[in-house]
Length: 169
Length: 101
Image (tube, rainbow over all chains, first blue to last red; front, side, top):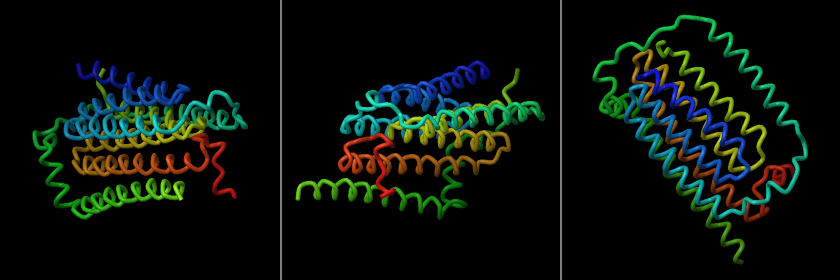
């Protein structure tokens, strides 16, 4: 059961990612990215982190996707198809990276040890463990994350708003 | 056949590679941002699988912070896209040479 789920989710994630980078229309790409993110959330759940799976669903597959769709809707995106790319160097670099990664993967697959996942206790899976960790050991990074989110919100509003004011005057 | 740590790592590397190819070869800013999202998510997957196999819950905290960074990155990136689009009326990287003068 676990194996079947893993392979289904893995295939979905990879094909979603592949569809994302090959589509011309960004809206279709966003749909493919959603498939990929939902599958990755499922993989998080398989890795006995249900709380993070829900967070991944809410943030990456929910909030960020909605934000992307809204901004793509605001911005005019239809001009890509009409024009040719100036340099084709990106394709070459991309395929070189792919070949390198295939070699590295082949080398890593040939090297054991292949160990099944150790059994987890009840405590490892529970969100309480993560919560206690966040307010004890990772207290300062946790607080700083709050500051980061706040400053990002302020920065986004400031950037977008100032641009509008400049255009009006 | 059991699922080992290598399965998760190979999957994570494949996703990361696809994201990297997207960043390198596409020229629509939206697709580049989405590829960066994908790369961050695949890195989070690798961290989480290591945390699962070593039974260390610290990896979950790291993934939590990565998710906060994903959200912030998307918000800031999209705001930059909006501002640049107002100025240049384009979302293609070929047209955006602001820093080259």
